[in-house]
Length: 161
Length: 439
Ligand SMILES: Cc1cc2nc3c(=O)[nH]c(=O)nc-3n(C[C@H](O)[C@H](O)[C@H](O)COP(=O)(O)O)c2cc1C
Ligand code: SF4
Ligand code: FES
Image (cartoon, rainbow over all chains, first blue to last red; front, side):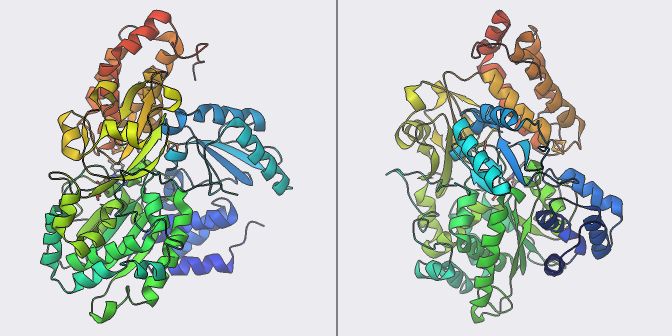
């Protein structure tokens, strides 16, 4: 048994379909919203979208593999995305990223064995004036220091239990 | 548990036009918007003809805030009057140029300003449908916009008969899912059609053949946000806010090693030196300035001796750099320019869509070469090789991402050549305690 597609998500798909003269246009939003709900682009999602949009599987997979936010496997419950691009790098973004690697004992795009955290080094997330910055799931964290990241990880660990 | 704070900076030099409602409580709601000049620009536009609206935008000297600085009125003028296909308005909210984070508060704090702008653009171009393309990472902005769109529909500012005028306009949000290249307007259109974000060959330009093969205007969030103000106060008023051929204000994102980072709304043509030292409070910890990236990481870098320049499209063009997207990145004396370039190229190598060879191969090779060079294993001819590869990307690619990678490279290799020489002499990076491992 795989993941089920909720009624809410199906309704969201229908709303999306009403927005475009060409159905296929709904593809990227559908994939992202489905991932938001299920955690990744599961096989069921791919099949459901192929059916809804009348697309061959390969054309959906092709699009999934192009966009960096879309993933075919679950990430951790808390997906830490640390920006190391220029504005962040100038204020220590790389050491924040290294600190996370060591603290969590995982490398880029890996997940901790208990599934609580995953880590990713990302490009600019549009929080440059609050550098160094990170996104955890969709939440932004700014002016990071190793101590601050430690506190955030601790509080999320408590929440994750 | 997000700890995201208001990114707006404070400075007496600011001229709040686009940001004038930011401080008001509930500024994102339609009620607050309506109490503060909201939808008045649209009401005025609806009493004017399409040509009159476009003329007003032409008079304003508004130029595209997405990066290229193309005159907006002229772009609107390219859209054919008669079209057998429906025309489209597309707002580019993909904001991914490193150092740039201004479109985000514009949507977060004042979504109706953007919505009103899109409707006015629709009226001016006789278009009845529009999309706001928001980068996936800004997922929360989709919710803010959807809520605001709902309010606009219920108050009759969107829909089949806007304010009883008979004009019909529908506007929707659309989300990307992580790809810098999707900010390029033709790649964005492909993404909006459910394809991978590969660019299209220009010409034809989107104004003639755009979304679904129909005439389409693609404008940046900040560009559009100016439109209601231009309609309400007149093109001439707007032109006078800025400097010659550069109307209005600009949202500058001051980041990097600056004492007071933040987004500041300043008149076009504001002096860069004053921006760094008065608005931004100078460098952190009293350090000395080494370099400035004036408009996002694609721009040629300026040295500390080149900052006596007005921040407008033409003045920066004259010194062979660009105003770009408004991302001003300040770099201090302790920063290694080789490392900086390495990180910039890591970005472009990652984001190259791979469609054309010079960009796909060139960016990856420059990045690899710089990894090695910065780690202390450089060869004397490496700087020339890097410049040579960049020269072979410049102007030879399908879309401007290739140029965006080549320009900072060429500027850093030529203006900071001495730092490359120093690495060679020391066999290590002079700014790092121990040589960095090769990655
Ligand atoms: C690689 C690349 C990325 C771009 N990213 C953006 C972006 O994120 N936002 C944006 O408004 N324009 C971006 N642009 C510029 C757009 O192609 C286009 O010029 C702009 O949206 C036009 O709007 P404007 O005239 O209002 O500036 C990008 C261009 C390139 C080549
Ligand atoms: S220049 Fe780069 S990003 Fe643009 S089409 Fe070529 S490979 Fe793709
Ligand atoms: S460079 Fe890190 S958020 Fe922009």
